[in-house]
Image 1 (tube, rainbow, N blue to C red):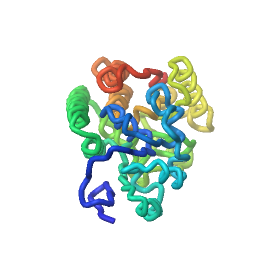
Image 2 (cartoon, one colour; image 1 turned 120 degrees about the vertical axis):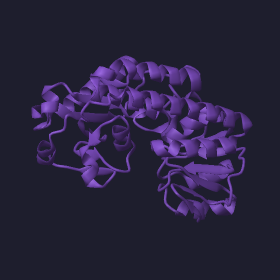
Image 3 (cartoon, one colour; image 1 turned 30 degrees about the horizontal axis):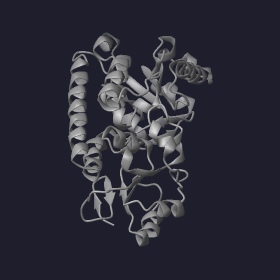
Length: 313
């Protein structure tokens, strides 16, 4: 198998594809903004429940769980390309699909640093119109990131940050999208010393480091705004109810935030960056309006698709 930086692709070059099966939801969202949903013939079962942002997915055949798809179903759909994660499913994917002439494209598009290359690769599969759409999206992303960086006060002290993944007591560290975003937003992430994308820690460890800001990532079950806000508030409350968390200075100062995981990686990562900039530097909040930026993204690239709750408080 050839290896080029973060991308693993079993072909000497990327060729156009008429039929795709897409397992990662973030890659499917990119395919949609590129206008390529008519070329998708199979999706992971998780995508079918994302009908607010990916309404077409409910009508596309499911191929089972993303990390453990049904390979017989995939083969029967006869795609040209299967899009998967860099490490999941394992290498048996290439071995078992090769006899059917199905190429495997591995993209970790939840990581901000991978988006530009991933968008261009997918656009190359989907055709000239997709290339134009992709370059427009990447231009918007670059310009938005530059504006957000300029909004960070130059003379302000960088706040120390800890960010918790979906599971309690697991912090986002190097190699995770959430960790990368905290750095882009001007934070000093204390989990850098852990040297792992997701690490369990004790309350004693957290108390010793005494972060200025705590971020909780929440996978929302609904994009309905009222339901989403309730879920975010509940997740934040559950975190603060754990022994020790409410006694942190960050909690006493109201600097514990819950954010939708949808904006903390993938094609909407600049929306997450805006939310984090506003959390880290309240004085810059008027220049880092995540809700307005999210609406702009939906209008420009997703046909005014679902809005929904982004943050609490």
